[in-house]
Amino acid sequence: MQVLTAAQMRQVDQDTMALGIPGLILMENAAHRVVECMRQRFGPLSHHRIAIYCGKGNNGGDGLAIARLLSVVERAQVDVILVSEELSPDAAAQRRMLRAAEVPFGFAHGPTLIVDALLGS
Image 1 (cartoon, one colour):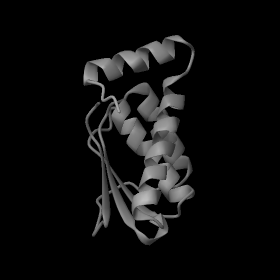
Image 2: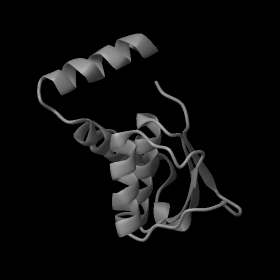
Image 3: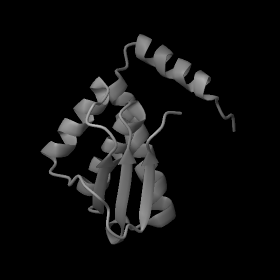
Image 4: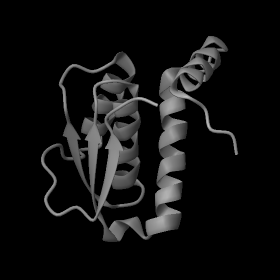
């Protein structure tokens, strides 16, 4: 297994987007894989209360997409904690989708799992 540095991962993202794959699609793909791994490790996720801490950049956007999938698809209890109202454009789009899905924002009370989506790669 190869592990990329933060700089290498940023370059992979930039190269992928230069090929025409939007950042929102990258976020969705990342979110699906994280939720799949969580389900395999901790499932069923509907038995959990999950706190997701989201930063203002694209990593925070990943967290917002994860929150939506956990709530809508997995039927988990989800609390989303945003550290900033100022978000990157793709993260702001994820926030709009999360609000449309009526996933709650606010402080987590007694989470059984925590997702850290605060900082970049």
